[in-house]
Image 1 (cartoon, rainbow, N blue to C red):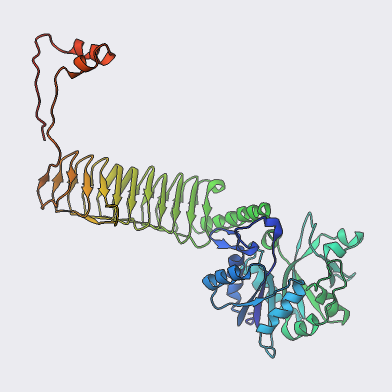
Image 2 (tube, rainbow, N blue to C red):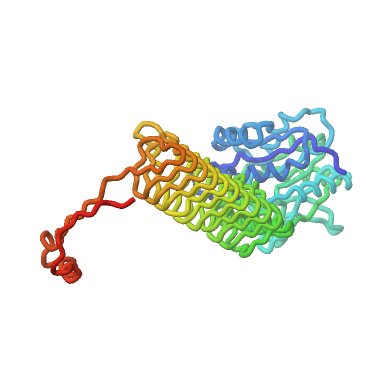
Length: 486
């Protein structure tokens, strides 16, 4: 087993003009819930390096703030003037103990498809070969823009030539350097100070240390990795392609672990999502953040969950949920919206066109359709009738209401918070509840109905409604005013 590297150095100082972005620095663009920098750090983390150094430059305050949030133990080193990758590594080495012996791994901050397997293999091969440097390379159909790996007649690596400095024969080479390296720490320190700026860009190229090593007869090795693990992202087209590759890889991992993905082409899952075996993901599902889906649940179709926990055996269909908790065997949807703080108990049901925010719905309780539940606690086995609204905002503050167990809320009830509706109570349909309802009571809060006979014929004479009413009214009918019936 390979030893822990002395350091991992991540090069994240570049401007990335091809991203055409004013909103974010290049390395903070990303996908699947992580920035590109976050993906790279996640791939490097299993190496267990003694230190992680991230070279920042363009919009460094934003990158450093992001780094503090995702990898607080990493050390940010500022490259105030971007003078090449060799210059960046030279500055990064100032943050690494000079006398430490072992391996230094260098990775770019814009290679989000790197895997821990590729990096672990690189370090292992580097140490097994006794090399002073080991390159991670890939073979590309179109190597345009990449540095070419030039090998000697015996197949040994001789040097790396940047695309802009390559001649016709070198440009014909399709093995490229991926900007991922393992170096002997002492050898790197010695070589990095001898890099020339005699090139088209006038910069210090890190790949030039390979020529320095081979020129001195020191061994350089290479590990070839699949192109879909080493691709960089320089613009949004490449970023989208990387996301598709990453998502396909992630879904394959989930499927091999026992998850059914009915349509991988329309299913998107973030890196930190956990999906247990025997879950079914139907088409057009996207799972974001730290969503957790328990065994046997069914999600979708057309469902988006963010930072949401789904219990065993639950079913969530055509739903948007953010920061919600869905209990075991609960059913949600279609067309439900669970906002932060929505907490559904075991076997609860939330149906069509229901919105729930910062509320608990107890075990076995139902909010079947056309309702808003905000800032409420609903007990067990209660039923919230259609078109019920928990009126939680008084214009200044949000107020909370409590509904007990085995309560029946009639359709079109307005509950003016803060209210308590006791266990076993009922509310009549169409009520506006402005005072608490004792346990077992029937709350009726509506005006008495008054029918004004003949109104349509008198006030809307000549209309189709008046004609229909005339045909339906017996000639001898007398005007009546009917009381309402609870």
